[in-house]
Image (cartoon, rainbow, N blue to C red; front, side, top):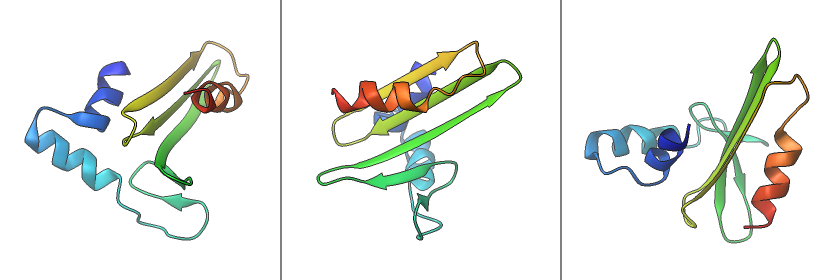
Length: 93
């Protein structure tokens, strides 16, 4: 997941960078905005991309700030949501 986040932020492979850049484009512009697989949030100075989900007995959360080159990943082996934990950590960056 860390490699995936790093390549979303700043891939050294030009073809991969183009593919990730395409996923960051807004495809649905009503609130919340959506890209290809991402929820998009525009903050005062930055645009953040996040996605979360889960399946039987596990949850995950990933948020990216391309400008700050920062990511927060929360993985859990519980059905308890992880979004609030991830947003809490992200707000401290």
